[in-house]
Image (cartoon, rainbow, N blue to C red; front, side, top):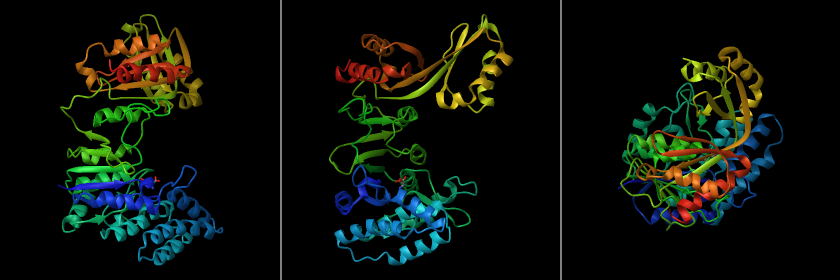
Amino acid sequence: MIKVVKFGGSSLASAEQFKKVSAIINADESRRYVVPSAPGKRFSADTKVTDMLYECYSVAAKGKDYKPLLDNIKKRYYDIIEELGLDLSLEKEFDTIETSFVGRAGRDYAASRGEYLNGIVLANYLGFTFIDAAEVIFFDDNGNFDMEKTDPVLKQRLANIDNAVIPGFYGSMPNDTIKTFSRGGSDITGSIVARAIDADLYENWTDVSGFLIADPRIIKDSKVITTITYKELRELSYMGASVLHEDAIFPVRAKGIPINIKNTNIPEDPGTLIVESTSIKPEFTITGIAGTRGFAAVTIEKEMMNSELGFGRKVLEEFEKYGVSFEHMPSGIDTMSVLVNQADFAKKEQEILAGIHRNAHPDSIDIETDIALIAVVGRGMKATRGTAGRIFSALAHARVNVKMIDQGSSELNVIVGVNEIDFEKAVKAIYDIFVTTKL
Ligand code: ASP
């Protein structure tokens, strides 16, 4: 049994957190490969080391006085080293970093040092081998992650190493410069490592006990999702739920390696297990609810639209021309509505409307703004009759007016559009009917 364990920034923000991490790793010898983030926030007003590095680098690159900023970064690491009682100096590393900052080694290089240094500290503390991600994680000339090059190198490198720490978030370009993934990218590194060594499980340790069924800002004490499929997760994260970097799924998915989201501060909590598919019946009919505000609906009406070949294409072409992608497109006999991101649409609104008039000759175009979309997701909905009915009766009881309905043909999700002012009320109503009263 091999587990790859990734620890997020808040799990490694202080010496106290390092101790929890070490206890977790030592409690299970299959936890052999560790991927750390940079030290994150110790308290809510704190600054992540990654952000400190970006800032310090931009000051240094402008030729201004970056030293106080660099000292603050050093202090974050030195505090940890001292409190853990480690016999470790990072002076040489910091000298190299300073020279590289002044020599404008790039923002990605700067940000990557957070994980690099934290990896050195963690490896020293655990007594594990440190492997610089620049030697085993590769990007291609276009800056895209290069799985074909990475996979065999990583596999070979780890083959004879029982325990290693590989810092998250970065790798190297073909010209040997450092490149990072997008923010939160250590999740991706963990997934790449798990794939390369054919791990049995990828544990992603963070500061929450898994994915919640609904946004805790709306539902206090929302229950945790115990098991979720990759597909369900995709639907939910698309609508705004975020705990795991979206790109962290594909490397392990292809090999059927499950991901377990766990809480460093409450390790005994089971967390959320993300799997390809499962025979485990979901606890509730729905797996999760997610939603976002800020949509506009452009409704186009034309008599006999139904029989006009190519009408939809002509309309959508105009959105495409101006770079506005559509989210949903419910339609009636003589109407079609195109749901778009309101802020994106507003920038090109008049051009798009004029284009539709010119191209498709509609009878009328109507715009409705400030719409929130709510996705109700769940593999359990397929097997249960009347799910949509229950959603709508719950919303009717809560006096929420439903503006739009869209059910994916996979029967994995139902999307409802409501007025933004009804957003929270609607989420509560749906949560209550499926989870609180378990209907
Ligand atoms: N440290 C990086 C960030 O703050 C990457 C990560 O934590 O995954 O985005």
